[in-house]
Image (tube, rainbow, N blue to C red; front, side, top):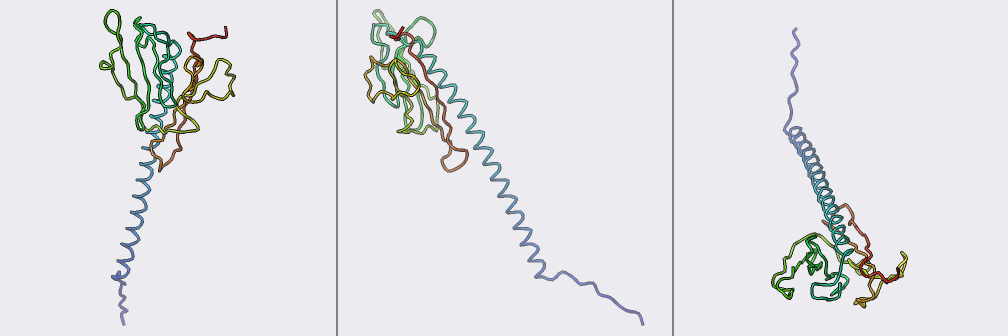
Length: 204
C-alpha cells in the first residue's frame, strides 16, 4: 500500500510571530541608523563650531594686540566686562582706527565695528556694522569670555575684578565655551587664548 505524506504548512500563529520578529529587527536597525546619523550630525556640528571658535579667538587676539588710541585720542579700551569688550584698533589694516566691540547676545557672540568719518573724525553709533560670529556659546561664571590681568601676570595670577580699572589692563584672556546640543554628546568644547596689549606695555 502506497504511503501518502503531507507537508506541514505555516500556521497563522507562526506567521504572526515571524512578522513580529521581522518588525522588531527592522525597528532596531532603523533606530540604530537614526542614532548613528544623529551622532554624526552632532559631531560635524561640534567640529564646525570648534573651528569657528578658534578662528574667532585668533581674530580677537590679532585685533587686541594692536589696540591703540582712537582717532580722537580716546583711551585704547573703552569698556571691559566678562561678556564683552570695546576697544580701538585698525581692524581693516587701512590706517583708520575703528571702534570695535565684541559682545555676547543670548548664546551668540557678535561683533560691531564703527569706522570714524568726517574732519574732525566722529564715531557715529548709527553707522555701526554688526556681524554674527559664533552661535551655541555657553556663559560661565567660572570661565568668563573675557578676563583681565595686570602686567605682572605670570600664568597663575588672579584676574582683575569686574568691572576692572581699565587703565591697569595689560593682558586679556579669551575663553569660549560651545555646546551645540546640551542633551547630546560630545561634551562642550572650550577654546581659549590670551593676548598682551603691546601698545600698553609698562614693564619694558
